[in-house]
Length: 224
Image 1: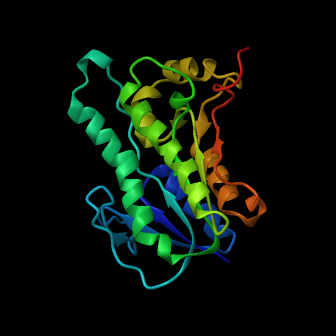
Image 2: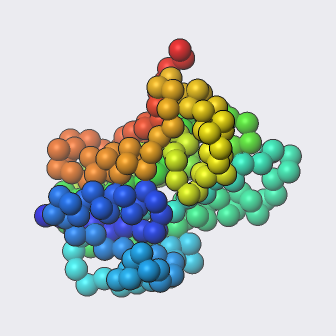
């Protein structure tokens, strides 16, 4: 059994990952920005403000879930837009890892979450691509620095059917249009990401670190 710390644990993907990991006998410690009926026992903290709770136990994994989907034309973006993307996606992750890295047992796994838009240039994605590109760089740098004791990997999904993405998938027509952009002709589900996160936390990936795992329906590598 593993003990895993979830930062930003109230997201759809985090809740699905929690359910899957707990079904396998693992213990999930949740941190959220505010109390919620969904996670009544969660610790309260905000990684962006570097206001995170102390923990007095060791952990076997850390997953950083906070993210954003800010899509705007480049000319309309302000410096503050880029700053906010970096704070949520990168600086928050840095704060969380610096806070809890000393609590990670040998053999632990850190999982971060990027986006397919870093690999595939997309219009209106410049702000999020800058931030998530930095997160992928952080993944590789920490994987090198923390080896051989701690593994660090990153997921890079395409648009997934969650509350965060609901405005892009709000009608059957929108969902079908998004599905058709992917070689597998479907939209990803929260279960797809939960399975991948569980995979990266598991000891079966003990020889895997510094990798960007593309869970994107083939979008980043295939043209069909």
